[in-house]
Length: 88
Image 1 (cartoon, rainbow, N blue to C red):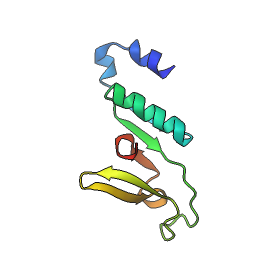
Image 2: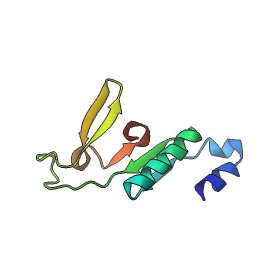
Image 3: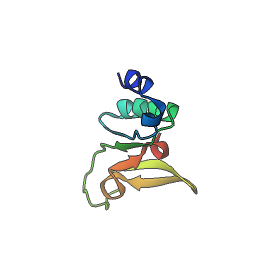
């Protein structure tokens, strides 16, 4: 459905689109892929188990890509919102 919407937007309107997504990991990955195909900014809200919710246990760590290569980020402290291009 999102693809149909994006395909029917005029180019000048498409330039103003940003995608925000939450949900299960496979869906976020699909949304991130769609955003990449259309060269759109995309933010994803990650859901990870958070044992302490203050960053002490590192139970919610995810790998993200940064300008210095791969880095580990804690969803409870550094997120839960991440740029989709850095996560997928």
